Image (cartoon, rainbow, N blue to C red):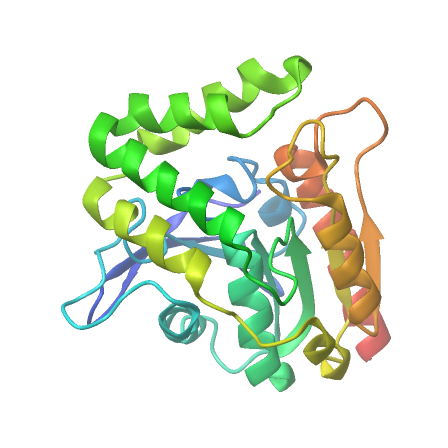
Length: 279
């Protein structure tokens, strides 16, 4: 059984807060926009219990981490640079890198620059497929304005009004949206991130992923529960990555990306296969 998570901080600026848990082959996980390090595995400790050392951290301007310093912002260039600093905690060993949404794009951008560091790549709920639509920017700008004007209540209300969530999942989505927003220390920084991250490109074209010849697991979500992370985007990533496997939840279940224990077991099984194939 793993002990309590061990906190770490990565400097100099912005100071990033994270934690490591467990022993064994390393895993580094990156969360999505407006989330924190808790919201990749949703509090599950199953991956550490399966014999892995799991590193998670709050992105700049999120959770307990500092906002971007003066002269910097929240684009993927900065997010990948922050991830490179976190990876120093792992040492020289190859590791499994994964992320959700913004974290998935950050992980893919890092992987394109440092494929030799990875034992495997996990892409959960990707959105960016090589184009940035004006309708998407309008949505994110509206969300930023709602947070700026109405705080957490305004943010949650905007999600409820604009995201088109199926009635079966609406209450759950709004509940955990509020929960993760209440973990945010710096709402002005998060507002800035909401305006900048969607305008940033983690890579130029989806075809760029064809050069990324590492074992990959792509986790898709059904659109009724999670329309913000289109199922077809995950399919496109799985088609572009040469060694990709696509997984999703069973019909009628909540998205696999929301099921921390089940997602952890899927990651552990995938990592085991990736390590075996490399030997």
